[in-house]
Length: 147
Ligand SMILES: [Zn+2]
Image: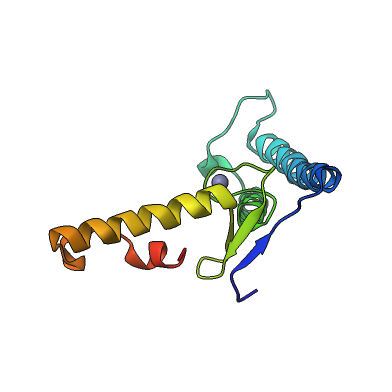
């Protein structure tokens, strides 16, 4: 998806269905993550149930452990970038806006707050004659992407 998009659902019944579907997807990923954690824990457990360090795993166990870690990280990133939850506040029950610069969805409130914050910063800079260079750690491109 390349364009900025706002997905708004006004009908209360449809909002409820949307929110429940989001919850189902997030819970499914959570359940999968729990299974992966369980397998990772069993890989690290010795015969007596004590946990081994990563260094004590056999090459095959370590390979499987890393596969599980990578899958879990991928799943988490997919959920974080999905329309199911806001990239900033993690709420799942709001209308969302897609920011194509970051390939992520933000709730309408976080999107508006970020846009307003950037407007305020720009106004302050204009009033005080502060240049862009005076804000070393300010990610101008990030805030500009919300305008
Ligand atoms: Zn939000």
